[in-house]
Amino acid sequence: MNAALRSLTRRPRRTILTVAGVAAAACAYMLLVGSAQGFLAQFRKLSTLFGADLVLLQAGSTSPWNSVLPVQPLAKLGEIGDIAGVSRLALGKARIVGAPFFLLFGLDPAEPLLGHLAIVRGRTLRPGADEMLLGSLAATRLGIGCGGEIDVRARRLRVVGVYRTGHRVVDAGGVLDLATTQRLFNLHDAVSLVFLDLAAPSAAGSAAARITARVPNVVVASAGEWVESYGQLVVVEDFARFLAVLALLIAVLGVANVLHVSVGERTQELAVLRAIGWRRQRVAAHILTECGLVTLLGAAVAVPMAELILLLIDSAWLGSLETAGFLPPHLSGGVILEGIVVACLAGLLGAAAPLLRAIRVRPADALRGA
Amino acid sequence: MNADPQTRSKPDGEREASALEAGVRRGIAVVARGLRKSFDGGLVRALDGVDLNVRAGETVALSGPTGCGKTTLLSLLALLDEPDEGELELGGVPATRLRPAEPWRAANVGIVFQLHHLLPHLTVAENVALPLAVRTLSRRDRRDRVAGMLDRLALCHRADTLAAKLSGGERQLAAVARALIARPALLFADEPTGSVDSATGQVILDHLLGWCRDTGATLVLVTHDAAIAGAMDRTITMRDGRMR
Image (cartoon, rainbow over all chains, first blue to last red; front, side, top):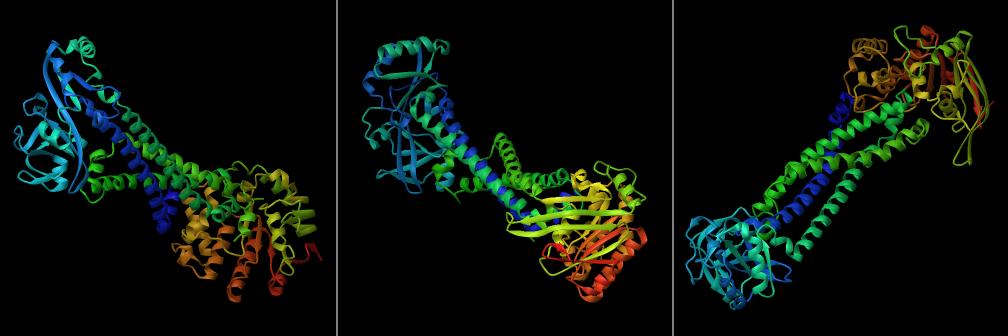
């Protein structure tokens, strides 16, 4: 261990470059896997965000944003007992100044759902007014607070409050009055989703069956599961899997390449050690200890690197508001651990081939190559 | 064969040392018969049937024009390479019984390369101590032995200097110290004075010959220099991969 530490500290330029190479690859892994997992988690978290017992969505829709529930059939909900509250949600997306893909949530101030939003500044919406509640992340990133104005589809809306849900996608958007949203996005009387509060949540199964029988072209899901019914989730999951595989490839190839070069260029040094009597195993242990230390150091450096990048994304230095909405603000412990393990395994893999070659070559051949 | 009276035990790989010692007592250090070695798939014939006998304690110069096979022969004798054909005995023991060669080299052989091959990131003392890393010596014994060797070669003042910062002559002296630190009975030196000025070359030669005189070690030294060859007990001249 001492010899390995000496070798690393006495060749600072090589050590720094090797550590930086490993750190870059490990950082890429942590960011990509962290992002993929965060993206998926944000999507799933939508399920429980609004706290209702049942959710109605259009049968066959691929995402909440293209679910259209006409108002007429929904009138039949009144014939079904056990429903304590109905909240309609109309979803829209628009380009605004500072956000090319700004998400808008249309809620009726008279319905329970709006009450679930924690207003941290200002007041709630007034029915029918051209007003907007701005998510806390959007407010920070856009630099707009209460009293500010935002143009959505050529209509000027006044920000009257700021809310925080803890869900970064929702907090990166804004909430409008339902009727305003329907007008802005030409939804007429249709909504995207309907959330139902039941008088007896334990009766959710029978209530769902009654709704399905009376309201056509509707899927009824429990609040914890409705996101799972969307086809878009499959795409999100595939994308997350793709990112994880890509991250693994980048990490393995990156770390392996760095250590391959680092060990490969020391063939002559290893030959000298063998010439003076070091056994192959001893030489291998010496080099692997060095590689292990470099890899651990690189992985350790990767953690603050990745955190810094996430911080920059979060604080508008990198990436858009929408990107910030879908990325996690911090790496999870699991992703950090995974990144370190992947970097270490990749380091061993990368060092193994040149090391095996170096200790197999006859010392005379290696020294002759000088 | 090992000239080290302080070696407490013979670790793995030094088992043949006792046989070697016996061979040395009988006066045999190196016996080579019909050694052949080619490179580049046989296109370059470096050694073409070399026979060689070196008595224990003898100092032998290998000389000859560039490319005649001197360094290749030295590599085979130090078990840094394997011959294509021929037999080699070291201290009366067939070389085939001395594989893996590293432990045997650690116990019995000191090598001085033409290029010093010091590790530049280590100090002189650390470089010199490298062969002892595989010996069962206490840290204190190791430190004392390194200090003694550096004192012998008048390198004490450079003990803590990085090898990369030494002059050419100091590097080669440090390489000699590294070769002698394990108190080898067989010394191989490949043009050890080739890259230093004549005064330093003489110092290096004096140290090598002094070591052999003091310990009874055997020295096989490659040189182009007639004066250095003349200081040896015997000179063997090579040409085109053969003894002349």
